[in-house]
Amino acid sequence: MRKVLLNVAVTLDGFIAGPDGEYDWCFTDGDYGMTEFMGSVDSILMGRKSYDLVVHYGDPYPDKEVIVFSRTLKSVQFDNVQLVNDDIPTFVTGLTKKEGKSIWLFGGAEIVDPLFGKNLIDEMHLAIHPIILGDGIRLFKNGIKRSLELINSITYPSGLVQSIYKKI
Image (cartoon, rainbow, N blue to C red; front, top):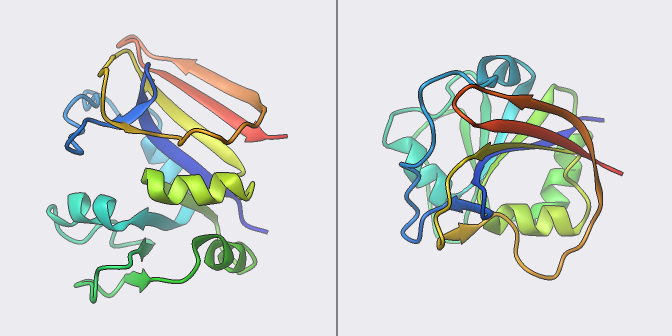
């Protein structure tokens, strides 16, 4: 069975984006393990807001299967992108049963919440940036409590810490 891996940049105060969706606070001065991570996945899950951000740069991840969950989009412009408006946990459960590499849960919060709530996220790779935004879009909504096991932590000279947790 394929694993679902949440890999996301997050601030010290738990935000994945600023109040208007901005992510200009994310460090871009190094690879931070992304090349290795990208080699371990062949499918990417994201919501419409995340898709809107990455599509400005062209075909998002042309060598990967990209699945965009949206209730408002009517079409997508790239062959490797699939538009889905099904129940997120049901769709992802089916996807994990297909052959392939791990699945990257790219974001955002509207997708993370239902998958985390149904215990469908196998690992969380949190790139914790030494930034405090004070306001913005939270990674997790209130109300879901779960213990996780730390399986690795990598500290970079920039102060970024990559912490990898697995579900218990």
